[in-house]
Image (cartoon, rainbow, N blue to C red; front, side, top):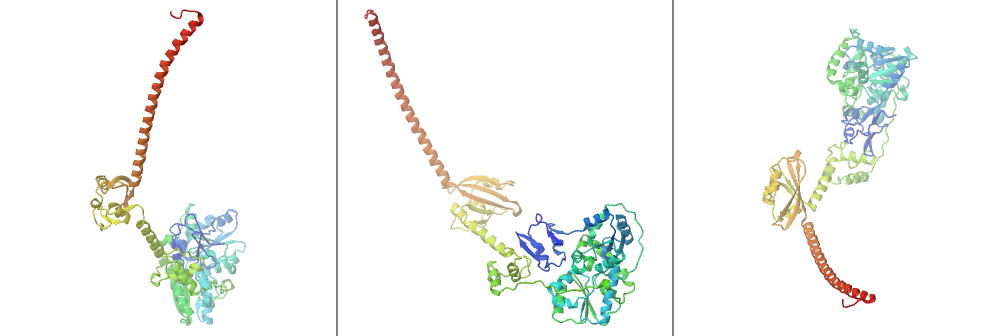
Length: 556
């Protein structure tokens, strides 16, 4: 199951997640970034940086609510960083019991046992270096990217897993839930090596919202000292140990700084150290789920530090804190220099001067980007300088060869840019007119009046240029954000001439037709006149003939 998934409808493919991902475990498919689960260390950087809320984290909240609704026994372990969100454990415990949880305990109890295991390793002094294993993101990164350093991982489970096992032993028929500041804890409970220790994880913000929906009665906090409560602060784990037994100690925060340390360790430069490594800056108080509570971090650190005076932890041994870690390197294909150079060439970076290593694509170098393309992770078009250069080149090509004249004016109506076609239409091929007032090259009262008015939409004018030799439709577009104007001159001279020719043909045709009609009318009238005369004569003849047949006197 993928812990972090993509909400495609929200994603704008801005590459911010790629730039933020420390392991580059993101592959672009269908122009969207998808996480490669086997390479991911679940640090949550992509989730935190996404401005479009396009990353979604798997949640166990509904499952926990269902268990409670069914009346199942559910106990909850609360991470020591809870004080970033809640300043009163007694109040938090009561609120959780009111929600239906059977028992509420601090994960610090498990952390206390874990520190006892670290003390035992320090006393035994069998390991050349010891890396504590509380941060699952760091453990995953070492197993996948630094397999040679797995031997330095302490064989000790995290406080969450250890406390989960303790709760399972104490409440064998209960579901165990962990209240977490950390996304990686959700991946840790899915690890087969720790299966069954913890059944579900709820983020602290989710719990904060859930509690806020219910009425609660305020109670006074009951103070309880436990040095393991300082686990979330920087160097907190080291501070719980009573004696390093000759080992030196280093606490390092942030994935990039941890990488630098691991590289030094890999080269054999560091020996005899106990390392406390945390993926989040600020320790667990800087966990990804606590980002919304940043202003509370310093107060929480102050409150947590009050436990530093508690009794330090001595060596203990218990199977509940045991863990085994293994090498599980991510296999990556090797590519030849020819293949890499070929991709660089296809991205317009055949010349070394074009390899800017700007990091805008999410990769530190152009070479790393080319390798990502070969791995099928990245789109070669995701290169900002190349895209800008190509867009500018294409835009210039279009403008220079446009069949329309294009003039760009500044706010003072002076020429900023003018293309060859505009110069031809205005008869200015032999002049440099940049910086000229537009009226000097295109005198037009209606254009001057328009530019002096406050208009926001495209306006159209018709102007005769060069003494009527050319006729142009002119589109005038204001570019508000640039305080500029764009004039597009469309030569309609030929069209107007064609329209005039067609109009003359129509007029000539109508005149010719009228002449034919008039002539036909005259002919008709002449025929009608002749027919009238012959008809009268015929009538007279017929009348006489009729009388002849009747015996009448024809002379009457």
